Image (cartoon, rainbow, N blue to C red; front, top):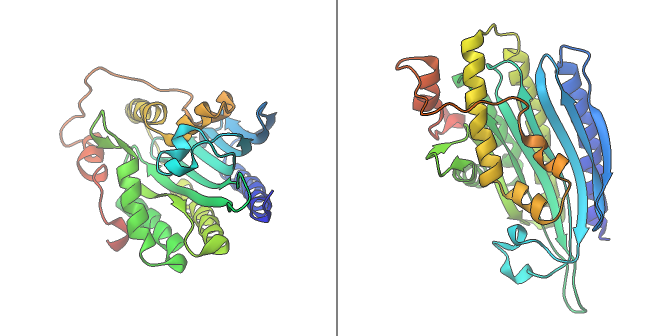
Length: 306
């Protein structure tokens, strides 16, 4: 096993522990994370950390996994067809947080490290990192969008000024529901197949992304989680959660990779919210805060430069 893989696993396990501790600090009830260790028959396993039924977080999952196999699944070789048939190791932390208060956005983050070891003498190991974070508000606040994207830019800046614009655009393109013709949220960062500057540089990038996510999201939760709300806001939150479900089941490559590699279904579908509604042909009232979400916040913008 490459030393780089062990280094990545050590960091990711520590990050999982620290992020869970931070979220428990923000949780207003006594609810805490349940740790569920699991093994995968084909090789590897993970630790799913799940908090459910809290006052701040209706559901939060911070999942670590390290899985391996004899053959990369199709979702992992879509942009690297030359790797088809190679064995692989994949390790990462995947985070999805569904708050109870509709004024607190749902958020997702992921950092991961892949290695496709050499199959024969003369071949080298092929590795890459990926990840990012994005924000899905139900009610938009300009200052939150600006702060979120400034954290995203700051996460990338030490590794090249070209990265934030590239990864922001990639995020806007990726987290888009083609069948609805609308973005999932206000974006952030998304990147994959990254190996610029060697392992230490690439590994430093995913560490920076993970740490900036923790700081950025905690700041928004602290700011918004005590905002009063009514049944109207709650109903809109449940309706918009449906978009989250649709994206994760229909378009998300991480979901597809997990299922195609015979991953643990409970951990893969941890990302789904506990309560959700679909309404037929719903249209927000003109001039309402709900309409503003569509008209202002669900349109890609250069938030970091505002």
